[in-house]
Structure formats: structure tokens, C-alpha cells
Length: 231
Image 1 (cartoon, rainbow, N blue to C red):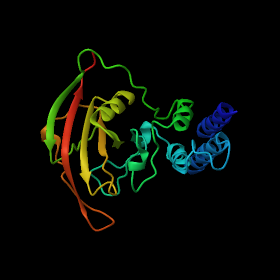
Image 2 (cartoon, helix red, strand yellow):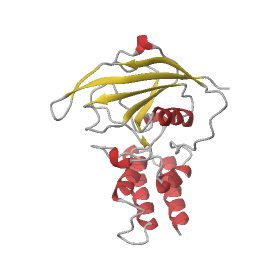
Image 3 (cartoon, rainbow, N blue to C red):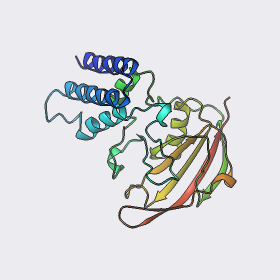
């Protein structure tokens, strides 16, 4: 029954997107389908395995459409005013403060996204290769990468999580992980920005400086860059 509900929601979403030329109407229908799938999967109203966070994140994941066209939920790059991360990948969604983001390690969200080929899918980590395919291009800077080949950004627990996300996004070859202090609503998580080309310290010229709703100004610390070389 749970799988059937997921399948129906995904099928309806794909059908609407394929046939409806009104983007807003399509988005609304997708969000409704996501919520329906979440509700149908919960055996009782108080079921702990489907939290309020998951249900809201489901609506965000599909209502916002995690596609390459909208930079996987983060159409505004992290150096521009009004930016918001598109997703969270890690083990502790409770550390995401200020936003409801698609948690790309949540079983329900991952099952539904797997049925939608046009959407970002949850990473499926593989055993590390004998030799790391990553080359570090800069370390511990106070500026983050700002470049035209920006793909998406989200929040992660670790640098390794950020690299895993890059391997999950077609065309990604570079990750920039850093702490956006005051820029994540108080969250201790790393910002993880993905790019299609490799960059060095000369491109790390996003120094923060954005005014926040609480009156603070964000700044960048612990900015690391890694370039991926396929083996």
C-alpha cells in the first residue's frame, strides 16, 4: 500500500508536468501529490516514522521541483541576496534551522524521488576507491567560490557528504564546503556548493557581507575546495 501511494503520487506528478503548460498549476499539483503520498504512508496520525519535517520537506522537494533547471531547489546562488539552500544531506535534520529542506537521507523522500527521473535523487554512497579521486585546490579560506558554472547548493554534515552529493549530480566536478557564519539561521552545518568546473583560491571571492533578518551580517570561514578526477 505504501509503495502504491508513492507510485500514484509520482505518476500524477509526471503526468501533470508533461501536459500542463502552466508552471504554477503543475507545481501545486506536484506538491499536493507529495503530501498525499506522505499522508498515505503514515499508519496513524502520531506515527513517529513520518514526522512533520518529512511531510513539509516532501512538499518542498516536489513543490519546488528539484531539477537541474532550477538548480535543484537553489536557483539563487549563495553569494546573492535572497539565496536559500535547496536540500540537506546528512544524519541530523534537526540541525537544519530556519528552513524546511528536503532531507536526502529520508526513506520516504528518497523512495518518491527515485520514481521521478527528472528530479534530484538521494545519494547512494559506494565504498571509497583505493585512491581518492579528489584533489584539494584550496584550504581554510575566508572566501567561498563565486562562479558562473554554479549548479546548486545545500547543507551537509561533513566535507565527505558534500563530495558524495557532487557525485550524485550529473556534471558536477567541484565542491566548495564552508561555514557561512550567521547565514544559515544559526545552523552549525556546512554549506556545500557544487560546480561543473574546477576552481582555485582566485575564485573564492564571496566574502559574505549579506545582512540577515536578525540584523547580523554573514561571513565565511573554513572554506575548502576539491576537484574531482574520474578514475
